[in-house]
Amino acid sequence: MPKKLELKTAKNESNPKSFLSKISDKKLKEDCYILFELFEQVTGLQAKMWGDSIIGYGEYTYFRSNGDEGQFMAAGFSARKSGPTIYILPGYNDYSKDLEKLGPHKLGKSCLYLKSLEGIDLKVLSKLIQKSMKDLKKKYKTNY
Image 1 (cartoon, one colour):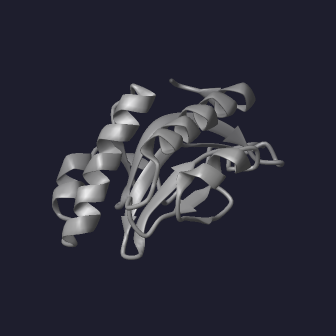
Image 2 (cartoon, rainbow, N blue to C red):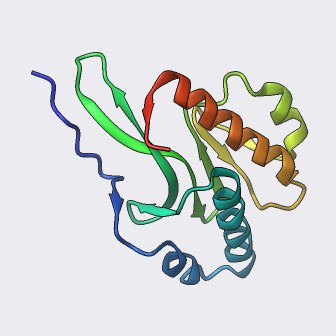
């Protein structure tokens, strides 16, 4: 019988701006405030905390192969010691041309690892966020 999954990284009532205010690295904090504004502007959605350290925008429902159902943020970012990590789901498979124009980054399945926003084209990042959320909506049930 399929069940609803309870993830460790779940949406909660913590205040995203409070989280940002506690970032000790000055440059990382500055970058995260820029990302906070960028994501809100691009998505038109209010930020929510997911787990202890991820700021997410929107949600989508996914189903595992066994039918179990889970919910996760549609897009977001986190302040990591190595720099900001951008979460754009369902991944970057079709975004290679945009990623070439983005600036210095490393790629994971649905994670974009940055050392900082220095050298990052924020217009390209905005475009990636928009495209990913549009693509997510085609594939999954979303709430945005």
